[in-house]
Image (cartoon, rainbow, N blue to C red; front, side):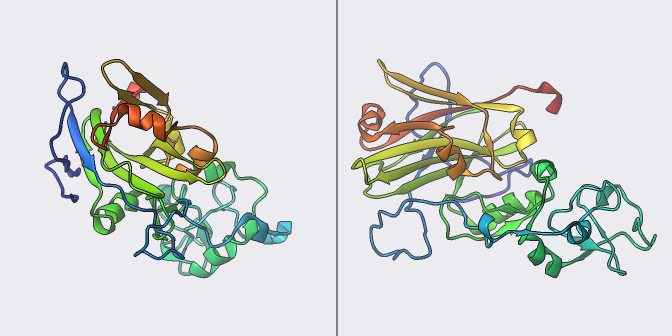
Length: 308
């Protein structure tokens, strides 16, 4: 299973046709193989039971520096006066501007020279240690770096939002993509031991969504818990324009979860920690599984038609 570009520039349905749990409608089905979460310290040749974790940032909250107003002023955008966040672009004279304002400029707002286009990597490293007093701009700025949305900690890639899909297509080639608003996510071999992730992509409404089914070991309760969540390859504000529905069903049972997709900036681990996902234990999974495979009906709906 691999990515390839379709006629609209989007990856086409890469899944293999399978059974259809809802005969009244024909849905595309993706057969998704599970993989153990890749953790840097784990031995890939052993059946590790290590719990999957979110990507680790280089500097944690305890490493942030409380800076003086004079230092913080160096990070203020001369146009909007908000604190700038990486990536930092400067003109030939060293003047900076934030990523939100740069596309609107025809020249450097400070010296009137060419538009800032030189990356300041040194300042970006310093910014990772600075504790900014107001973070509202960070929540809405779509130009800040995004981490690879794939579960696990092995891929430390970071880049701009528009670079996320090219990264997934080039590096994570095993991820299957289906197009359509209503598809079936068929996770195979859910009885695999230890922690396992199943990941696929769904493309609709001109956006890409990442579907993640994650099985974690709960050693204190001696049980395994499954978590299913949908992320938008986009900003948090864009995610609020969609709803997703996950449904496990048989002829006599149905388990449904509906929610707003998470932005990939928040990550799967954050959704799980907030209980903002479909969660069920192994006995529940077995009620809906067939021959060790679990089918999840996934439906994406758009709640703001102005996007179209």
